[in-house]
Image (cartoon, rainbow, N blue to C red):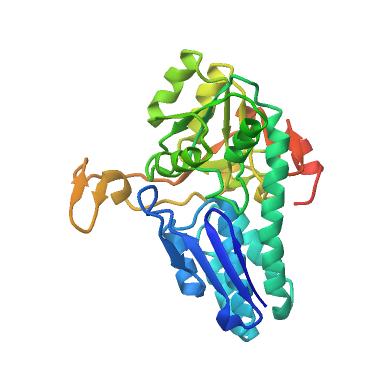
Length: 340
């Protein structure tokens, strides 16, 4: 047997013999100008791709890592599988989906890991669809919707989380205009969300992160919807840096602020946002851009830099959490209504 499965950012060529199976990732660092696929079948390549953000988005990181581990388990001894699982689990600290997926596989015998990884992939496709349907009811015809970072098919195996909600509402016939934060420092809104919206033919405007409050003041934004990489038990939600600022501005302007994330993003072991580990990244991402042929620097190379990749939005600023199991308006309901 030899089957191929492709999503927007992931390709899996499945075969009975492990050596014929291949896992390819769309290199998100090369977008929007180049669509480059990377063979990430080997664990060391997958780990490097996760760390370098060639693959990103909490759900897709979990799916990709599960596929890598499941494939590796088909031809290796338990001791080696354990080491690879640990290395994959530690590749990114904030996105809890990664730990969730690896832990789920490690509860099984080696021969069951590959089928389980494929099941996780299919589950993500299905839950994105349910999330989109659940959240679309919150968007009205004519809404201006502001989003932050990238939360579509590049961040999941399905249609996405926050962007999946927007896409579903658009496909239902609602006229929307999306305001896309560029999302510093890696510009995942500017590079990736705009690329997806172009492909979906959904009207959008790209803005810098510090323009959001002014647009709200001008009445151009009626809803805000973002994703999350981890949701604490009290509802505090970690997402790409700048999300907290968007939530504060939305609260001031009395605009609903929604989080869209799968149930696998919930972390029952984490009491509040203060316990969520926040990844920090290289200073060069803030200081300027260095390429093979040229460099562009907008700050001194010696400038001290604080560059957290995420921040935490308190539950008090979140109007509702949109999940694959429905929409919840309180952390108590969120954690009391489904498996964690």
